[in-house]
Amino acid sequence: MNGFLAFIIRASLAGPSAVTVWLLSFFAFDQTFLLSSAIATGGGVLTYTGASAVMKHRFLKKHHLSRSEHVYIQKNLREARSKIFRLQKALFSIKDIWSLKRRIELMRVVRKIHSLTKKEPKRFYKAEKFYFAHLDSAVELAEKYVFLSSSPKKNRDMNQSLLETSRTLEELTETIEKDLYHVLSDDMSDLQYELDVAKHSIQSIKESPIQDEGRRL
Image (cartoon, rainbow, N blue to C red; front, side):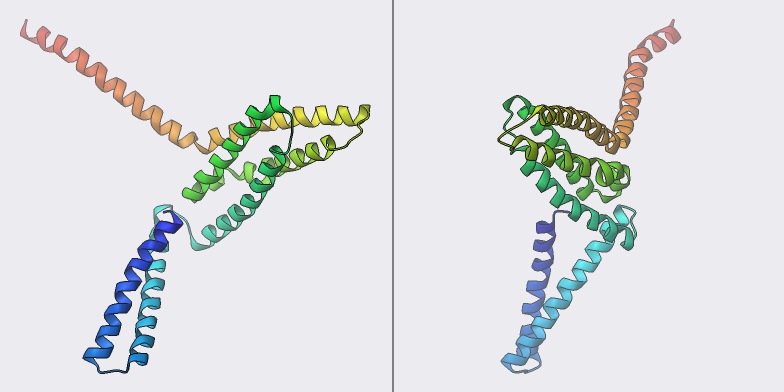
């Protein structure tokens, strides 16, 4: 669930709960204004905390994750987010207009993998190569390219290094695209199964009138 939406749900439960507790404390139990306010605040905090615990438990159960797995995945996603920011900054510092479309595509794929994993944390295990190797390499190569290209004077070795870095980054882009396909592999398998079932059903419907006519004859 979206973090902001989850916050709204928790707050919408905690707010009315705090108001109800305050009214009961002040009018039903004849407590002072300040004491009723303190009790109401505590009640709201308890409701908010309880709602958070229930929502988290349901989320973990839905995605078949243990609490420790979720903590581990979230830690890696936070680290990846800062790397993605560095990658974007480096890629869009490159002044080569001809490779702009490819760089935009690379960022689109990188962000897609990250958003899919954030939404469904179990997918992290299918994207481990991306998070632990390919993303780091992309950041390193992009920043190296920016550093070399920013030099006011370039010799033959620097130009050769720039060319090799550009080619390697291009190859890495294809590798990261394969990472995305791997993350989505289960979805594609499910879709293919549904297509096969649908085709079989359509074929059965087409053949059934012929079979019924054969029986009548």
